[in-house]
Length: 286
Image (cartoon, rainbow, N blue to C red; front, top):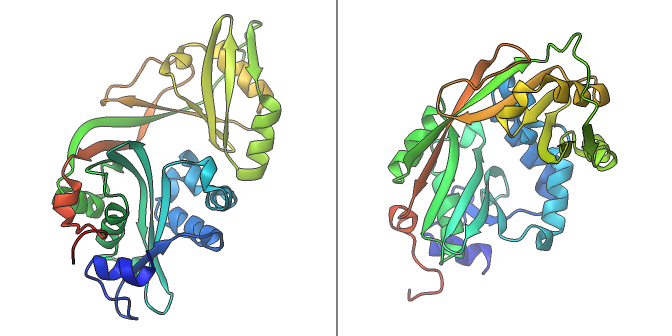
């Protein structure tokens, strides 16, 4: 379907004063990165892969090789003159359900229905999708107003906890092995973030580096094992903070430093996204 046909199927004429939607292309990657980074408060950027300098290079790969990222869709909203207004990044996670990872609109275009147009375009192009889920920062009032209007309901709250890595005098565990270090270092050097695995005896856990100085623990139990974290810091001495995200608002146990809450996010979902967007099937009558 052409941009013109898609725009008209959404009731939007592709003129210079209207919004039209198209798939993102590789040439958009640097702009996507710029808009994404600008949408996050500076205090949170160290904890977000999408706010790192290399995210544009990563998205170039995603857009150049869509077959390696099945079900993922980037859409760009623009004027008829080609001025880009915003973008959405969605992934099909079940046959009838999509996850909205990002929806960003440039400041000058906010309040003009750009976000809604992006979501309607996605739903029109994926007629099997009837449900959608997302994560939104609890203090992002404009986004929550939009999602409330679209029928999203909050299902759970997560708190982002951060502690300074105070490991002076802690001996790295002798039974700790870091797997895939060469790939993790290459990934980080290229994109500014990455993941690797740590084996402790017979147990293997995943860790991440969302930025140069932050270690993300996907399993909060690692916070009670300073010898494991000391082994990681020995390999990556620039790390000075640890991040963990847990359900609810109670801090998990920590043996590496006092935890402080830096953010809260809500998981929201709806099973009636098509009806709330009033999407017309682009392949149907009319």
